[in-house]
Length: 351
Image 1: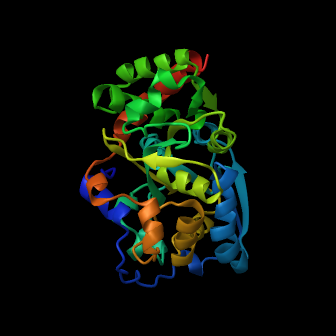
Image 2 (image 1 turned 120 degrees about the vertical axis):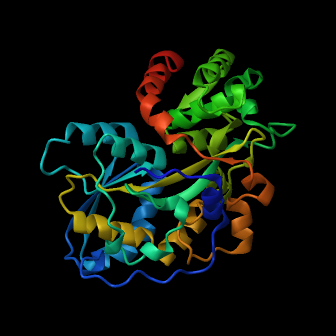
């Protein structure tokens, strides 16, 4: 059975429960009792890949003798490779970094190894929103409208503002986030993320107005920094990271609702080193790793024992009123419609 995330568990995740749960009982099958080895990690690379190395791999895995290799690519080709390798007894990666929606999709395709939580010493600390039968959430945030306050006045208030053609070529979108852009457009156009046909109308109007498309989050950030663009969509956590880097950017929680975002890791069924896969998951769940990701990248932790300073939590989290507007994604809808969404995005919107 796949896990459905309801609003209550989402709010628990965004609220950063402070209490520590008791650690899972020690088992000889746990990752920390397994021999070290080579672990191949599928990841997006960029800032995320760099911070995985800094906060997870170097402090927690390399001292134990693990050789960690990052297989960096956007999620679409990595998912396609998993599908292509499904008949092989041994795949080429041990663990894959994907959004919760993408982990759901891979599970539906029969490609995900069921998670044995008894193999994780940090299992008891995982927040409910991040605990799936087919993967584990690493970081949490919400999709917001980001803008340059020096250029965009008055401030935006809704997702719909991030599709307004009046901004011309100061409006930007991110190619690798096509799913979330299209869902936000449906929410803005019809009050329902699944109304992507209505959302396409907003996107095409923005395109005709001169909206730009950037291949990655980092390219979008550079465009904000140089004033090439001034408004778009991004995770609140990224906006915090950009603020820390000196970019003039603010964010607002959209009036239509805030799309929740959980990103984490799953294990392919044919992973060559599953003991290494569990060791990697345990390392990403370490208190220190989670706290440093909150500081370095602005994402809320997915473990209950992480401690985040109140001033930082104010920047990376949401108010009680905003949390009430938090909206879960329909992972089943995305899994069913992703291929068609990607085809339209590539052949129509990007053409």
